[in-house]
Image (cartoon, rainbow, N blue to C red; front, side, top):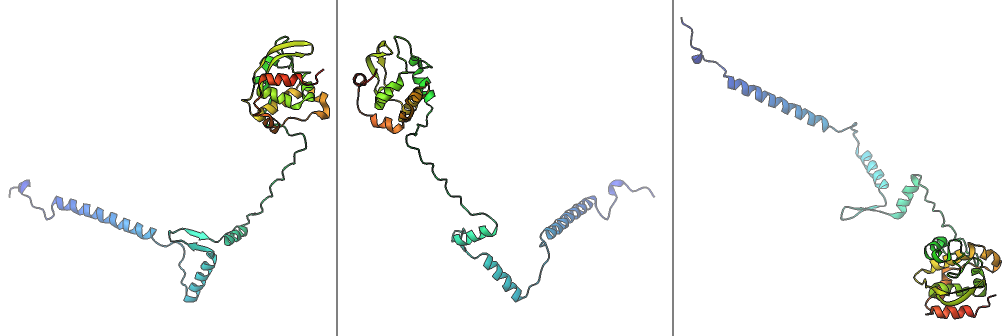
Length: 245
């Protein structure tokens, strides 16, 4: 009997059916694995404890006691009573003692000094004319060292007026005549003027010569003289009225 042609051979199960069977089997296996994973991860952790009604009520009472002082608001937020919150903090070992504020150190009479670097103000505003050592420039700008103390002793307000309103006209310092113009420095703050005056009085020993008579300037001393409306000529007249040797 001749061999049957391969194209006419018949099969009980076709190749497509086998493929579908394997595909469905794989999908089913994946579904089973996923189901097992869901069951495993959704199991409650720890051990379950069966409680009777009395034990259940006791646990509810304990939870209610722990939450006492709390109030749930309509928006879902919670509010706690301040006294209850304080007790909770204390129970957790937090020290609620508040250190008393440090007592302010009283100012000693006559030693209030402006909180500005007077040396820096002097370097920026005054040193170009009066020089870093306060010696000035002969016949051009008068010295401060050895002279500013005399001005302070004659009238403490005069030095403030010179800074605020300037000085114009002829003056004599240590036998040398000067005839020029010192500009006003009213643009400086009260603190800056007080600080720079304290600097020129102390930098070259004038304050030491004054001894106890020297009381550092305070910003309030400058504020009292500000706004008098003086001119540089008015300040010259005030200088001429001083008792200077």
